[in-house]
Image (cartoon, rainbow, N blue to C red):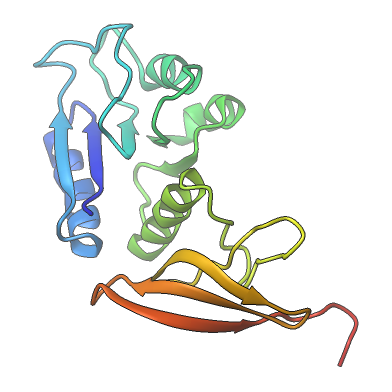
Length: 187
């Protein structure tokens, strides 16, 4: 299944750069690029429906700034994840608004961007975060997230491991994974 991404920024080169980052990792991604200066600002009723991610740049013309748009988006329930691309000047305010992720517009690292976007997409699918290779826990029902594999269901578990049905994303191949759990304080 293809991810659907909407990129909103007035600068065509920046939208193209983000498109390149997305399509080099997710070649089948469906991307819509939106220029708020030529197409007009999105209405207050805009819900982001149909998108898996909203990539929001900080440039929206002279009459509106990215922080104002970010504030409108993050406050809406059911709105897709918002990833904000800002500057050092708006970093403190953007942090307080708590978008799903944020980056400095002039300093985007491809690997970091792809990893963070994958995290955001996975967390919205109610999968555990990628703070460690195995974050599964039988008591909480959190499942492992291993790069390149999509969790389908838990087949079994012991104190030391979990067995999962998963799909290898690159080949759309179903397989069974046994994931060992590292227990704290034991050698």
